[in-house]
Length: 329
Ligand code: NAD
Image (cartoon, rainbow, N blue to C red):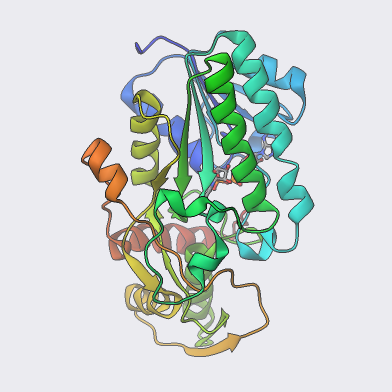
């Protein structure tokens, strides 16, 4: 595509959508439409030289407005959050099905050339994620289906919606299964934050108040991998521009336990905290990491930002936000 073809970013007021818009601008794309349901002053990143629209994309008419004349549509809009949110809001998570369904219908009618859908590692079969020392998840581990209840089922269904729109109607859909994305300009408090941001906030609070304590959800032994935002944005665009049509992992293969994640942030902040474990708090599966064999085979690339490096930038941003007295959304 050329730099003057229209790109619509849905969910642009959110973490990944905002980062994608910023990156597209930096690359010199001149026609960007940014859409989110939140008022503009609540977007993490908002740019005056972009066509910003406040729309509820659960509504079909709004999706027509979002996709009109677009060459590429990125669907990054969803009602979502970390485990604390998705375990307690299954119906709200499933209602995001309206966003992707209406966007697919509108994109087909608008003759969109490329349609990207942000799926998740939450589509993977729970039985494959019972051990802390889990084998990294391969793309075929999504079936037989036993995804995360609510949020994961919606993602798996919407993946298939994209597949069938491609097979039956020729809409060129591309699907990435994101594994835990983190970085600056995202949610860090309020109940929707994910583990890396929550740990940064808790450590920063301990540092600022001098109360050297931290509560950790679960045993702290649960394992995950975390992908830095710049890798996510790069991989998303690479996949969207490619001819690869099957769902593919987009995640880091650097697996750590939550305790190790806390170690890293403590080291960055220069503090040591007393840890309390909340065993009844939402904690998700015991182990999850990304097998990157396929993305390496297809693209000769995988997310490579080391966790320590990405967490330094994330911690610094959250710390500054807290010092400035800012609240996340
Ligand atoms: P986010 O919550 O920061 O951004 C999502 C945005 O969608 C929000 O700004 C929200 O206001 C908007 N939105 C929700 N409902 C809408 C509606 N009806 N109409 C218009 N806008 C609406 O989340 P994110 O981290 O940027 O995630 C982007 C996408 O990536 C989502 O689909 C999410 O499920 C997926 N994903 C994210 C992660 C992660 O770790 N962040 C992991 C796996 C998958």
